Image (cartoon, rainbow, N blue to C red; front, side, top):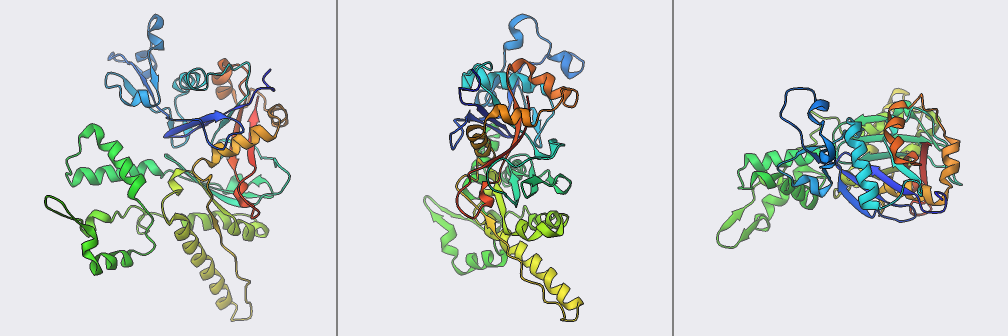
Length: 395
């Protein structure tokens, strides 16, 4: 029966969980990856404080309902893309399956997206065409730079950056708190998130930003009952300052340089963006410009060291954006589950229960749920929009 009904695709992120049925282009539900539970005030470890009698153990909320529960303790089971509390994650998944998807685990296969770093085995190509490219996946809690050559993930070259959208939200919240704009404390986080999503952008040139304000100051003044002048301090947030953080362009260049030399040019040519934190305006254009400058500087240095005898061929650098960028991981899993038989994928990448004892034991109660890592790399193709998903899995 599980092979006849569409598979359920679940992408559990640090901030939000995307879920829906395979074959769709966007997830049907997007809920915060949090759970609100009741904890006793007794002294003891976390597991002892959560022990409830009878049906009290069922008294918990997930998603948007868990955010506004002042009498409950709100927990986030996933941190920086890695599940830290499997007990809470199991309860969270049960609610997702039965309350949101309303699916019977015996009737559906489940495809769960996890981090590429959590997969210690090599991928195999799924699809009819070979894909080569570099994926920048930046969500709410973690950023990854993942190189894929000839359909295989180069696991030793993956870079993990524990800075993502949530850090920008906290940074914006701190700025609003320091400037005393009068936002209620219980609404400060949501306000900071709204400011980040609506007004944040990647600055191509900071000097030009200042010059725009100096030449046309009236553009930044709104008159109503008084005059509200927005100064340079108000519209400038130096979050990604290269003086104390490594730019993302240097991280991408370092990842590609660690890869085999024969696949570096295709990796530079197909840099694919994925995740909500790559949706900032001018993010792709700034990344392509900085990455191109780094590559050109290296080629120029090689030419100078050879005394002008060697003239390296220019390297084409392209950062690809697409309309599936925000939910690229979920979309890749949806395409994988709808175009390839899930049962064949499970048997192809079957792993023994001894190798993954903990997640295997945790997901045991979900019935015939099969778990897979998904990564959308379809935009590496120059022929059109993303079409393929990539996956690993165990049954």
